[in-house]
Length: 327
Ligand code: PCA
Image (cartoon, rainbow, N blue to C red; front, side):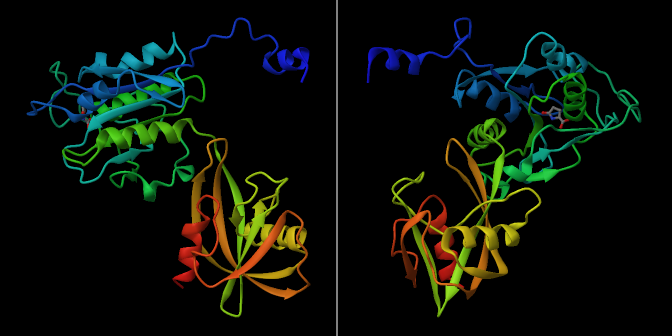
């Protein structure tokens, strides 16, 4: 390589003024309130201050449990852009962490806030409920730390008010939601970091993966040397094209990759897998060959497997092979 080519490779045009720091992530918790002497949400926020997720530094704030606290982040968003905003609060009666998807346009305090304010049966703006700007379908919630659940009810107190005021103020698509934490859980810090990672990672790409089954065995194919992830074994398939579902995608992909005509049967399951540069949602379907003689186009080898341990699987495909074998 000449010096010139080498230089070219490292120069990104117009990059001189680009700041090296990415936008920060804002994590907020609350001070204790009601009869509590502590509040896990404020403790977690402080514990994460200064950590880095996907190249973004976490900045934390502990909010007062009153109107000033509820509006603090809304005010900050007018001056500063964040890569993601996650509000934390204590849900004293919850058994699991709750991913709050909705901020209700309601205030109805059972107890006064820390300033002595007690609002009953009132709205916040009168313009209706607002919704968190995250895509939980891309999160693989079932496999997250401490089994969080999706919730549509953030209460009628300060947590709801804070989420509402922040969403109302946000003029862009900054991912933002509220995580209610129960009084006790195993790893609140880990869950919050995992939520932040989910907020910052790319959207899922839907991919069909075919479990081609014949004579009690299932087909594994090895990615050819010139393909991405060369040498790893996988279930044949590929990205959904516009308008396709998993079945239509698999009929087309298996025709293109293997020159086989297949009939698509039941779904085995869905797996979300983060390859770092892309996140895929694999829709794994049973396929049965109806005609054709196999010709490999993107693979260099195939094998009919009876169990999950016979090849070096790519990403989640080993887990998928286990699920198929267990049937
Ligand atoms: N939880 C309260 C307000 C502050 C907090 O941590 C709530 O659920 O509204």
